[in-house]
Length: 127
Length: 375
Image 1 (cartoon, rainbow over the protein chains, first blue to last red):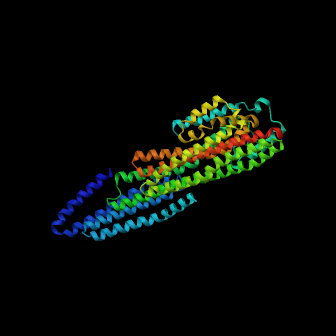
Image 2 (image 1 turned 45 degrees about the vertical axis):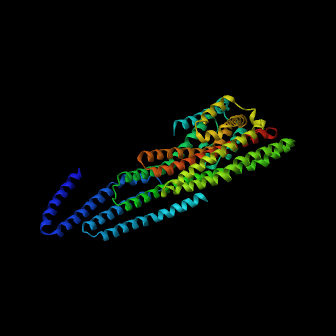
Image 3 (image 1 turned 30 degrees about the vertical axis):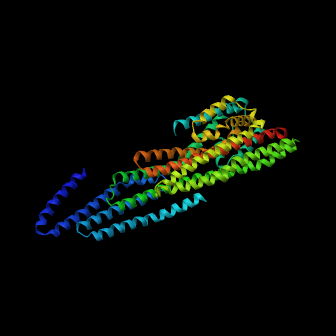
């Protein structure tokens, strides 16, 4: 039950933020950002820790590379999302939007070779 | 595989059983003579190269002793085909599960745009896996049609020459035109009309998960239209063959009825072979009486691999369609059921061409006795 540990840390940080807010609003934002980054690190660590099962499933066929691509995509989406949240917390929605745009661009960049492969395959079938 | 299809395959094998049981076995008559050994060698050379290993005995000789080899061959071919395709379907299934998880929980991102990009990427991976499967099926079907066309077309002039050599000028003319009609009817329709359509449908189906899935529906509509066509061609061709008395007089009513009953269970194949079943049974019986189990083995060696691979692919696709619909991955389920429809059409075409091959072989074998007896 790791979540109990994380929830405990979150509540403790909440108390710190609420106390700090009375003296300096800036500190509370820094604490929030630090917590977001730590949470992202934990999530990514847990996610890639258990990729063995997924990889073994994908390794069954010749197209096992797709598993790797999808995991990469999930990682990009998570980093993009958390970065957006951090920017939004700091009141910089403009930068947050650009981060989301960059994440989407990265995902499309990952999709490009797949799109090319699909077009080639479809052409091959129809020929 | 659903129960109906299993029942169909089992009944087909049972229908073959009496044909094979009456074959002279080594155990009954002792070791084969030198001449028989040479004949077995010749028949062995007729088999496709990749299938010869199934018929090599312990002392490295070739044997066609009866039903055990036949069932062994079928079992090994099924096992090979299942092993070949199960890996790809494992990947497809895990992709479907991943897609469904992302769709249901939306746990990755609250942003709609990022979620859409992730779904797009996952759909692309699924489309690629499905397209790879369709490409393999289309390629193996293409080479099957080419081989069958080559065998059937090349036997036609030999057959006509044999008739002419025997002095049957009118029979030569009738047989040539009848067989030619059959060839151009079934093979022409399948190779030059259905096969290109199948390729287009497969191409449409492959890209459908990337869009909204409507392409798969279009593929399904076209498939239904062309299924009717192949059934009509099969009926017409069977009618032509009915005039060729060589086949009609060998009909075994009971076996034909059993196989027709089983065939009726399978939607497309059932209608494709329904009208020709009497002719198929008669042909198999004639081939068996002239060449023994070896003739049946040669037919199976040419026709079974492609039919088995289509059936196994269809079974595995059915599992994936079921998984998609029960996990809520509808766009993927649409694409996969479209692909399943294409496999139905491919199966019907392969069965139609196999039947025409059996007919052709029967007519050919029937011409040979006055000139040389066995093949």
